Length: 391
Image (cartoon, rainbow, N blue to C red):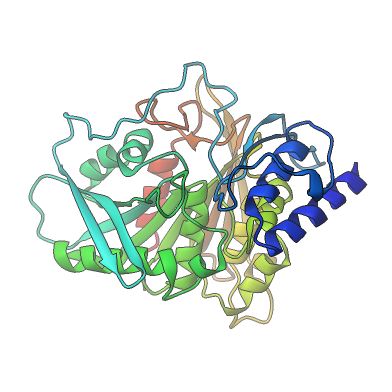
């Protein structure tokens, strides 16, 4: 089995380097779809060479730390259905709920790197002080309105006086609506999608009187991976980050390494990305039955977030760690690992939701890819963010 996987990776790597993405797609589909692996020369089923996304079937081999189960494995980061979901899939709801008092504004933003749409939630009511803001990055096959409905972030923002920015991906940039977290050009400061999101955030800060010390970023799946990229590349802009079912910065550099990172965990490139990193407080949510993005990626997000290039050793090897366990009534159990630095200040939280798959924990079925049986990730992220303004 190991030899077959190695041969598949070598064949896909050759095809990708040769620019034959269509044939690479077909090879992955056959190999991971339960069909015997065949040499690259026989991969003739693709109809085009510029395929950006891949949907395949795969089995994740359980390891000693996480117990995985078979599920749909979407290479391009399209989330799978929650394993415990008692209700059928709900189609995306693009509009805000009528009982929310704030304004849900549509807009677009353009800079030198491109144009992206967005939705902006501005809570109703009077305010005299600059408001905090969270930037929410949706997953594949989602849009800003759907993501707002599923996370219920607008309701929580209204109650606490937060502004919420939802940047949207364009199908012309990715066929499945995924943020391009695995492309090197979209992992760097001042380039690609990170520059669009950062400049969009700055524009909203200026236009709506946002408190620049209380600006945060969060995301699900591909959006979670992009949120990790934003925290790494713009630490002066984002005071803290929330990563739900995502991967760390520089987890992959192309399609082949992205597949490997999602199945097995990030490569050495992710570890080397710690070298120039500024510590950004981070909260991670991940289901231990996630077969789309292996839960070990959450461990690397935490390790990367707690590392500072100014330190001689990783922050994750120092300080204090406290573990709490709980149970949602009628729902999932969970473990919450709280990391504190040497001064006793919490700089990271890692929530593992037991029995949960690849879906927003505690979300609403008014949006897609949610698991209402888990602890409320939206509420806990806003609580964590409130505790971590920029100094």
